[in-house]
Length: 237
Image (cartoon, rainbow, N blue to C red):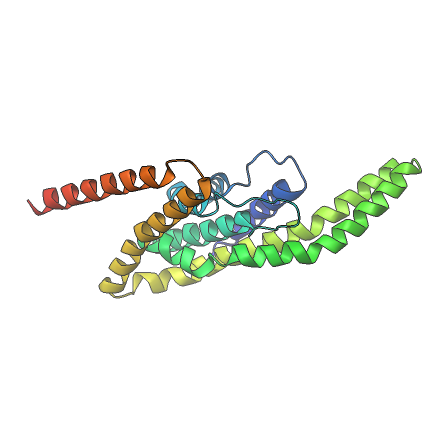
């Protein structure tokens, strides 16, 4: 059953984070790790938010808005996936699992690319409002200039808030189906999460341009493999 109060909360917070990313404060609260974790915390599934945000933070770590280059919208990807994972975990009643986190990322990881298209689509609108606000400020009409800036924020809030709320609804609807999935498929999704993490870590290491990034990545990968083998042997024994 869909908890509409949770959906509304997810939508409002997703919209506010979209504003923080583009027009207000810009204090890095919209970074995937912070955005996803905070959304999970609000929905009562902080673990799901943390693990989804951690993976997407690595994936988008090297993205930057430089000049005319417009990167994928990592905020909507993080909040959408986190909302879906958290609501799915709540609907199943068993809490977040790697299978649920992987499924949420598979279903809604593409939102980053969609967000880039939305940002590009809204740019002419924001540019027109900025010009009007500047002209009115030059004529001493400061209140009207501020009003123009506020009008420029609403589309971001409404569009991205609706997307995040929609992801939360989808999570609630998918939850009962997840509980009925074959065990083999659930195990496959569970293993898909660390595989995604490994790919995201490799992308982050590649994008860091650090002098010894490849060596660091290989060393950490080796440690993880050793730890996993040791843990598996311990369980078998």
